[in-house]
Image 1: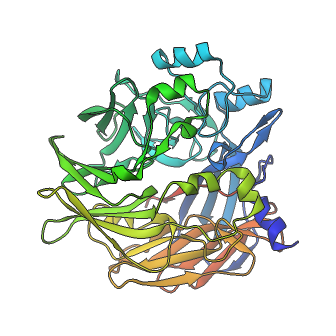
Image 2: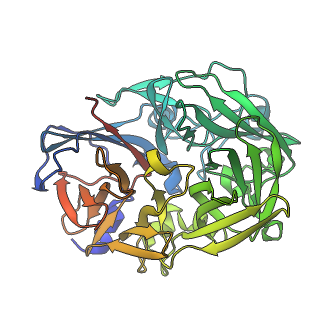
Amino acid sequence: MNARVGYHLGLTSQGRELEQTALPLRGQLPDWLKGVLLRNGPGLFEVGGYRCRHWFDGLAMLQAFILRDGRVGFRNRHLLTRTLEQARRSGRIEGSGFATDTNRSVLKRLRGMIRPNLTDNANVSIAHLAGQPVCLTETPLPMAFDAHTLETRGILPFTDNTTLHMSTAHPVADHHGGDLYGFGIQFALTSQYLLYRIPAGSRRRRILARLPVKTPAYMHSFAVTEHHVILSEFPLVIRPVDMQITGRPFIENFRWEPERGTRFQVFDKHRGTHLGTCVGEPCFAFHHINAFEDQAGRLRVDLAAYPDDDVIRRLYLEPLRRGWREPACGEAWRFTLDLQKGTAECTRLAERGLELPRIHGDRCSGRDYRYVYGTGNHVPGALTDELVKLDVSQGTHQVWSETDCYPGEAVFVPRPEATDEDDGVLLSVILEADTGTSSLLILDARSLEERARATLPFHLPFGFHGEFLPDQG
């Protein structure tokens, strides 16, 4: 099987569901690596007459890699949502997707201003809400599931009365007590950004701050430090009324206005006070790498950044399957915020780019750090062809790559009782073109040398995000 066919498999539906207690394993797992890697992402790109146009609209599928007793088990399940049910029943969907037309009438779109018809296709990430694992997307509809069986339990509703039309799929857990921080948008003639905190064990969003805005920005993630919450307003903005009158899919109503620059809205993390706006050069990003206050008290915000929003168009399935003519990958940009001057000075942290960035979160999230891991795209033709480790303090990088292999997000798992920031392993699901199958790759996080590889009997579509749940005791 040639590389192009193999690469395309990552953008092809996987309708099978499998449960296997021990996958074929090459190499040896570290004795201490015991737990479950849960992953979320698209599993189906067409159901009946329904066809996705964009990678982000693929219908959700959960995966679990079970690492115990030196073996790797596996199971996968499609997330049983209203969206999937509609697609199976009628070949169409009603809830608003990212970039796929829902074929809603003008009347239904206008009604959506009052009673939003939000998608429950939670295909982006995994979090824990009130002690329950949930799948998330950019709507405020967490989908609960059983962490052992992966069976869908349904929407886990919040217990407050806050109405949001858009909500981050990347809430940030606080080091002190486990509270979750998040943000959302209320679309209206004058829209609002809302920052909220969810106390540990609760499903109630406590509003920290509201910020009125005429033309809201598209923001997929945000940043939380020890003392601040930061919204990064990229100059990709929308007039909310356009969503109701144009009939275009959600993201196609946003406009790129680089003259606005990138506006960092800074809030006090504890009181919710809006401390000011810092403006830097225009850019776009899906993911924040990290943010922190340095020893001098300056705010640093690190992004996997692009010079503009063209990457969104590159991720439509047609150009993705055709193969990119030029590599396209986020670059590690650092903005240093000066609240007194209202400026944000940008520097590039390394020559090598990356996407789907991960750090040693338990130790470094919201704090100064050194290493970030991600997927890379160094040669033309593929969405991802390498794993990258950046040393942001030295500006250096290390790379893992293998001919005709296409890796996904690298989840860092620290070795118990480790003292060094990069003492652990990386877990990445890779697509192997020569066999047309996917594998779980385990790398030493220090050297990027392979420790083990567990191979599935079929391919998995390219996914988004995952979390490792270590065994207790």
